Amino acid sequence: MSDSQTVTIDALNRRDMLRRTGQLAATAGIAAGLSPYVHAGINETVQIALVGCGGRGTGAIANALSTKAGPTKLVAVADVFKDKLDQSFNITKKNFEKQVEVPDDHKFLGFDAYKKAMDCLKPGDVVILTTPVAFRWPMFDYAIQKGLNVFMEKPITVDAPTSRKMLELGKKASEKNLKVGVGLMCRHCDARQQLHDRIDDGQIGDIVLLRTYRVAGPTGSAFTLPKPAEQNELEYQIRNFHGFLWASGGAVSDFLIHNIDEGCWMKNDWPTEVKGYGGRHYRNNYVDQNFDSYTMEYTFKDGTKMITEGKYMVGCYEEFAVFAHGTKGCAVVSLSGHHPARCAIYKNQKFAKEDLVWAYPPPEPNPYQLEWDHLMEAIRQDKPYNEVERGTMASLVTSMGRFACHTGQLVKTAEFLEHEHEFAPEVDKLTLGGEAPLKADANGKYPVPAPGLITHQEYTVG
Image (cartoon, rainbow, N blue to C red; front, side, top):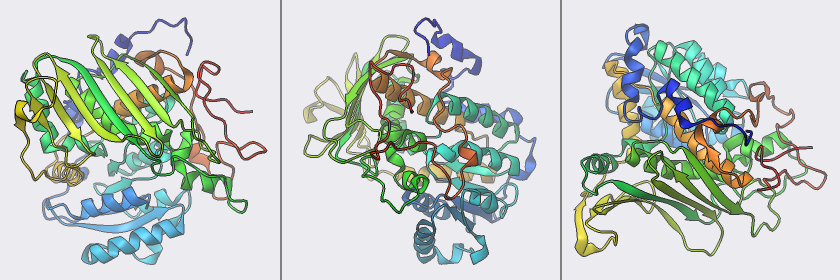
């Protein structure tokens, strides 16, 4: 990404991204009817394959089997690790015994296991992709080839090259009339949807500031200890995927994407640029590539700012929330996590109880379940449904914030979309026991960002 480039956000207009945030379902409909086999009737059993048997995959299959739109059953599972597969399968079998029909020869291990699991399905069935994000694009590509509807976990890209790949694959999915859900479940939240509509109605005036926070202690595997001597490096990195940018996009991409996406949704726009800062403070013996703290300032084309803060340090103030400030008042977009959102509107900027204008009444429906209900309804009723473009843009905007922090540079959205650094360009060729895309040095340390020193990409190797 050269400083001399003068690309503006208008370069994105060829994909019409910024004006289609809330209209993605309609875009998928252009090819509706071209592939009638993707439509499952109300009483037809939809078969499901789970690819990626970690905690999120186990949660996703529970939501999938809990939908009421029509019968579903799990018929195949796949993972790189047998312990993960067995744990997820046993939990799912215990909770949904009548809907689990997975013989031993439909339990697949290895880097090609996703293909074998999808081969157990017929066109119009559903595959769940909940592996680390690095593997998302080759798996999605194969699902499209097989004519499968897809649910994939967020983020769906970690860098610009994979974002461009996913945008093209999203178009192919639309051409086949495939239904594709992306795990940004907050977009399916009833409370947030009502708040969004009220903001669109002008109930807080024009948005002038958005604030998004996920500041907490060490989360997931974002703080990664050195590799055990007996463990293969590739296996080690996948098991600790939050620690490595190639596998997950790191703590920013995996944890902050929801908060960033919520803010962009309320604004009905994607930002045009971002600057950011962060650092590594209490590293002890950790060897991951993450910073301990991140602060980003996004700017939208009308000048509105969105502040995003992330932190993963022990003993510090914690906050997990999104707020919107307008010319007539302010709003809680989410408070204390993803669910319940506790959306509310206040008549000034103080969030004082006596100034409350509106609040979504409890209890709130679970958005993790709602996103599956909406996807399965689209499959059953053959409604246009494709969240790939929106999911890609949310992933891209999050990645460019991470890039700004890691390089210390002002980053423009359109310019970043054309960036050429791909973290793992041969991720589709990885094999069990093989080499990892990232290598440790002689001391077991991995390359880390150096803001102001390494400015053209987030880290260098060798």
